[in-house]
Length: 115
Image 1 (tube, one colour):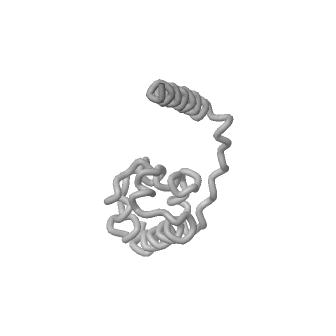
Image 2 (spheres, rainbow, N blue to C red):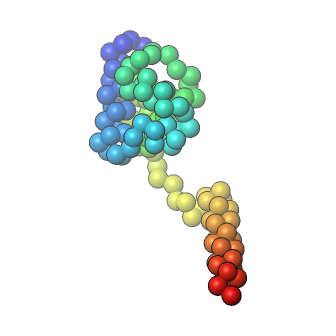
């Protein structure tokens, strides 16, 4: 891809992060599972080659389909990812059950301390 395509990516990613999602680079990095330096490089068109998995992770962190950045590189607008329903996600259910159990444990400890 040429430098102009990566400049389009840089602008679109920055706009999405700052204006639409109101995230810091650090927050986007955490959501994407990549380093803050990588986000900075993408937003400044600092490189023209990334691992495919990195671009997919950043796309998903921005709420786009996994090939959203590829779409921008091809001169298209990125497609929004379908929202997931956390209640139907098994991982979410397990985490919620663990959190509920921890809350109950904390309440029991507080009760013991008051006695």
